[in-house]
Image (cartoon, rainbow, N blue to C red; front, top):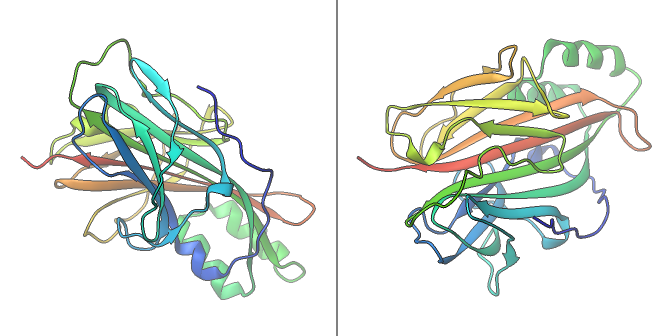
Length: 268
């Protein structure tokens, strides 16, 4: 797969309000047929799956759409969706795996209270709180953050070859389902594994939310980077995580990667 590369690192200060935003990718159809060209909508919002703020095309640094028998790409749609960036791609039979990775931006948080809220919200590890306690009297929080959004969609038709599960991006942080999430039933359990720099990441906070529900308490990955998440009904789901760590840069003192993926559980 040849990734789409547009531009270099983008730096932009944004408000704290955006720290609560997850960024996700959703297909226009949860039951397409092989060969269908469908849309994929990418948005940042606070109430999954409602559209929030549209991603601009210049922020995309890498993207792809793959299945067992094919590798392709996502292309800008002729007409966008309100509050979301619309991309199109042709799906193959079986499981299709689509992703978009965005280039880094800069976030500044100006108050201790706002930093505390942010750390609590993403489930930051204790060492991050301790590091910030040592820094906050002399430094302003400035964070370089990157985002990776995936979605999985099952298309009717014969699946040829292997599986697109496990395909990685060029990003540093990944959440990978260990089985096809589109085949779960309404009482199923999904095991995911998190990686940082291609190594399993222990102690990472991971969340899951079903459309129409409130987010559940965050879970943490074990020593192998794995955690099991329960599906409790039909509909669209978002799995999300933020890996945050201290960093030294020309214009930032923290670095993070946000990763999400979405899937649909069929109604019985």
